[in-house]
Image (cartoon, rainbow, N blue to C red; front, side):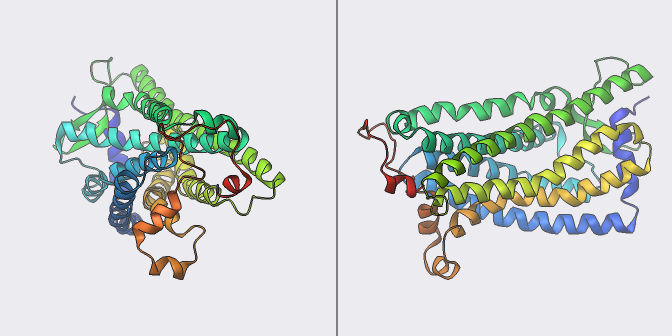
Length: 352
């Protein structure tokens, strides 16, 4: 018997492709993903060029450069995912790209949210402990610490390394799926239960550790920053806080609906045999996925337009606008900067 548990998931999804409503959803999804790919590759490529090659290396530019790299590499996988959608979830690209593409997708999904939490923590330290930040917040330290979000993202992607592979059904259709061959009898009821638990655990981990916890850290940091700046009467004048707020809000709005529905979709795996709830959740996942992906092309737009008059922005060069948006809030805390024992001035804090 060549079929397996995961192919049953693909077949239940394949049945949905026969409905007109689902076809319309897929077409809309593909159009949005195509637009996201073009805008995101151009926008994030520009951010990488400006932050990586045109601007002085600071902690702030380092953070936003890494976020742009995460978005850019994720968007580079979209053409492969779109082809798979067009082919009704089949995978024509072989075993190696099956692993590589979905590893890149998950690493950058986790990496993006961890980096946003890292940036929020950095902003929080600058506002609450300006003297320490002035003396210790260096590019060298930030370079070492910013590796942590990437390592964490890699750890939470290990399931893809182990279980993700290509598998064929009885008709010869090839899918990129989780398969547990070699880990037990994949066709016995007890082992189906084990596989269901593993897939559910993956969904819970993605939602709790890959979304809820980082967003909670961001919310706490944002609250502390807002309280401190409001006491100084500088809440409305903080440019970098506006940028960070816009990045966080856009990430939450784009990703939370998809993450929640994807979690419910995973939990209801027991209804995979054409259960009505599972069908509805499958349609919702495919409907919300383009919104989540669209977030990857939003950040460059936010860097340019937040805090800037729209017409004035249009008459300035885009690289110059990006440079202004990501300019270090206070004096650059590079290794060559003379350290001062005095805290940043009121003007420096107001520029944040």
